[in-house]
Amino acid sequence: MRRISFYGYCHNKSIIIFVIVLALTIFTINKGYAYKHTIDEHPDKMDKKQKTHPPE
Image 1 (cartoon, rainbow, N blue to C red):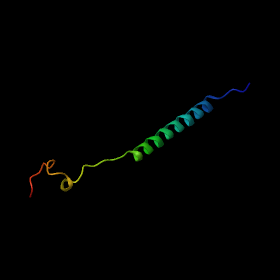
Image 2: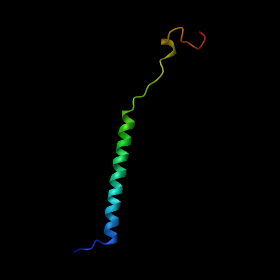
Image 3: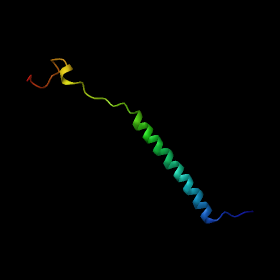
Image 4: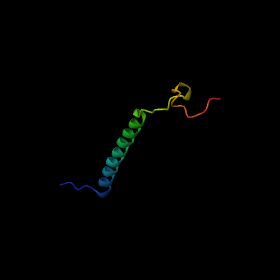
């Protein structure tokens, strides 16, 4: 039976951790790009009832 050295075990473990971190990074970046950003409507386009600033 072949024995796995300690360094071989640590190397394999490092690769697994690297792959997990890489997958989570890609997932987070994709989720950020998919986020739908919304902005408030321009005040000139709002109804007069909704205006909060006096006319200039």
